Image (tube, rainbow, N blue to C red; front, side, top):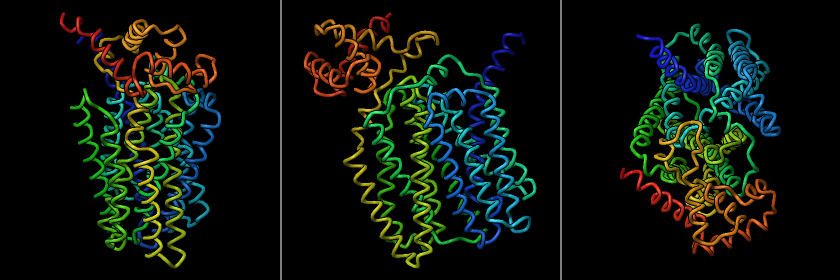
Length: 490
């Protein structure tokens, strides 16, 4: 074996490290939320609810900090010390959580402080994955996320069969090992490009975030509304939900690999939202709260599957924008965390108010009505089609890393603009519209007012004889296909 083949083999191994780093992050979260390091008796059930509350509070504070200074946060996330500090903080939090066990140093204060510190640390590890996922083709990024979840689920299964002393050590070391794996992966040109700051969010993206909050709230409310299980029952329940999550991830990888031509999140987003809506009615009304061994694995799996979809859509939006990776991923995860935190808090308040059964039914029906409003009116599948423009993977495969991947679209836009007699400014607006940029983003990039952008947009629609963004995109796609035909025939 020559030096070149050894180097290529090593490069391939290095390129897989972010998957395992992300997988270890998933393993730590699955282990923590299952309560493996502390759930010994049914009386310890309060620790799981408190872990959800305080860990997610820490994560939300960390995400809010990153979002408040997006440009500076990007530079921090890119630095090696940040990911190391994140891993160390998560490990310190894990140590505090373990020390607070009743047989070691029973203390709610130590437990809560550990949860918050761990929330800060694990958030830094998650943010580190933003550039790696956002630089990939959306379909490939979704597959990598699912592969990371598969690896994380397998890691949880290994953690579940370890004796407690070994389990404790692994729980503490997982974040540090994840951070070290991230360090071995250096940023390439595409990843550095998506780390650049992007324009402000448009209205559809804010609706997307609002939808994530509502669905995460509904899923967490379903999961938290179950009666406490014994330690053995809880262990069995979480093992079942982890195996279900792994099965969904495996199926998603195969379906994504087989759908190179028609990949789109609308096809999986709509069924996931409908399942949440149906279960929000079915579980409480059919007594699912009383049979937690059945209802809880379903709710747990549903919540994680929806997280997969949200992370995949964040990767798609980052790839499309070619920038703002940290801001996009952190805002999407902040929406998920905020919804889950609210769901956990509401379930705790209802559980301590003396109206456990009826209160949960009413809360679920109200959330179900809100989720239905989001699914059918506020952020329906049509909004996803308008927000996420199709990606021509064949064109990307023909380009080297140093070339402009959007060149085919730019050429098609130039051809259409010339044929329609557009002005120079209209052509610029048209090209950015075709790339999925919003009116505000176009105004920022061209240094013109949003009202001028709207006027140019109306002119572009008139000259192309289209009536919506979808019609504009279809016209460009048809021209790209026409331009590509001679090359295919050769």
